[in-house]
Image (cartoon, rainbow, N blue to C red):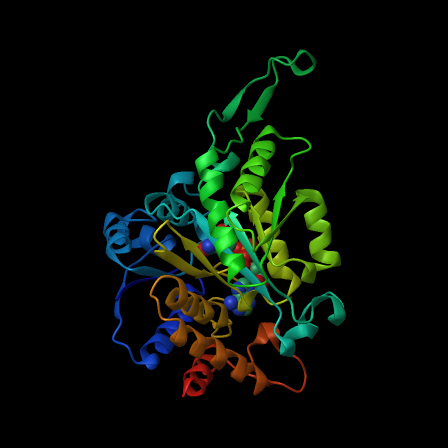
Length: 356
Ligand code: NAD
């Protein structure tokens, strides 16, 4: 099993190092090969996604990714910014399905800003389409307005679109995922206003006929944003487009109060995937040894389950993480009085010990 290890910037190298330790402790002989990405790659190779890194990602069975970005690169041209690496990997590897679980571990219920009875036991999955929508639609740009009221003024414009096959493939991914969970899919759109969403909804209904065991519901995105705060446990799998998914998956992650805990996966049609924590590179705490590595360790578990066909090993990691939380180990971001505050490395030590 070849795994491309791309630590990236900020806390990326610190948290990825712990996930690598956990993978090595599992036993199987993974072939782990590391390469620079993001700002770190720009520094050594002049590009956030150098050809050698892309080649490695292409030939690997799966990719373990840390995070990219740092304020020091903010002045670079857009195509050289660290974040372009992740967009480039998604595009070149055709990673179109993003899985973002939002789980509230019983021991961390108090970390959420929501009441325990609303958030306790939360376990939902946001499936976001990654390759289409307004983020990639053409035409786009800045031009001179022709609108009578604003004629001659500069205006920005983008194009939202989804083709039927794009909606079909993400629908299948969501229904298949729901089959392995609570058997409910909520498709989020804005079909009362957008033509793109009308087509999206039509296709979702058609594909749902192939999954009679899964219940399909629909929700407008504004209502979904409200329901995620009001009654998040009513959801099981949420499937939505790129733009709405970008916002809702961050909202869902934040509900749990501990972004340092949440993994994510971006998959292609053959279940090859890129696995990364839901959070960014946290430059504010980089190098301090206090970052929470659990989201990255749980991303490695997702990698074993979805891309490498090793569900039993994935279970072992997830159980080990629950075990260290039950033992009271906490990094600073999830620390509460009465628990044991540990560093990034000590959290890695605890998970490795709990594996056995
Ligand atoms: P962020 O997720 O990096 O940080 C938000 C807050 O959460 C910070 O206070 C940070 O200290 C904290 N935090 C995040 N991860 C943590 C962890 N594992 N342990 C403890 N605390 C943690 O978001 P941001 O500050 O908006 O962005 C910082 C940089 O990350 C930017 O350059 C941004 O572009 C980049 N970013 C990258 C990705 C990615 O690589 N996929 C995703 C989001 C943001």
